[in-house]
Image 1 (cartoon, rainbow, N blue to C red):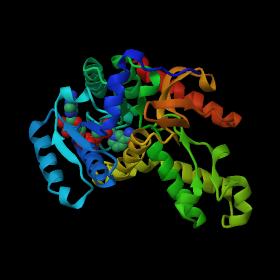
Image 2: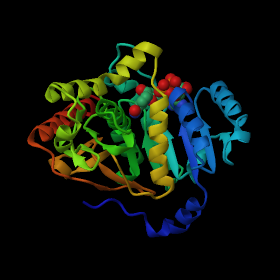
Image 3: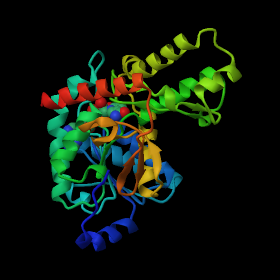
Length: 329
Ligand SMILES: NC(=O)c1ccc[n+]([C@@H]2O[C@H](COP(=O)([O-])OP(=O)(O)OC[C@H]3O[C@@H](n4cnc5c(N)ncnc54)[C@H](O)[C@@H]3O)[C@@H](O)[C@H]2O)c1
């Protein structure tokens, strides 16, 4: 599967771009500002620029952030404008409405599609050669909207997808097995939403497939129902947090920093970002989360490892739901 190659004439601009690690965040609400806060502490970026249609809010967020400059690695933090897209390596879109209690991600669809589409169009008009990371929900549909509005090659427009959900899954598995989360490799695939599913066939604990690790761990009386419970908890996590405190923003901010590291440091990291499929897993013209290699040019490869027959059905189901949402726009 071929991902787009950047036009040769743009090479000089691309090289200049890579000398400065500049991230532009569009949407300085809870998710955007939490990400900016975490990113400023990471030392990954030289410059972090915030943009929001609410000028008072963005001014306040920037002022609050710059007052922490003495405590973080050297970084320029400032308010920006559309012109900042041109030389940014990463443009992160968190603009839009947040999920309200009782509201599904798909309810946000139409409101956010207009917002994300117009931002992505402007990023493209400014001649950016960077990567776009879409976080606004429903993220798979918004990734599709941003990709189409930008006219960019597919690998350069990625959604945060199920990177957060996979982290929730790893946390729950680690807690269940009583081991360090860093020893658990596990993925949630499909829609970042109600139809997402755990890829148990790819779940790996302490270097072993989960089915081999189970007898070693030997803690559960009924692993089948324990599995279903863990998967359900992952799927419902956002609803629980939103009901309790109105929004989710800490863990997603960290997930975004993780994706940022892969882009700014050319890490070739495997992550479950949302990406446009063009035949992988037998699916086309739909953005959803599958394991993919992420680096400075975005996604360079989708990893089409073998899924079980049940998992393939669930992936197709997710794809169908996302396509239906896209078609309703
Ligand atoms: N993908 C994920 O894993 C994930 C996790 C949590 C939240 N989210 C999503 O992230 C988005 C932001 O959530 P939040 O809690 O920060 O919401 P928020 O309401 O706190 O912030 C959104 C910000 O976007 C700004 N905005 C709206 N339209 C804009 C435009 N055209 N240009 C610039 N700024 C604009 C608003 O003024 C606001 O400050 C939501 O869509 C939410 O559902 C995604």
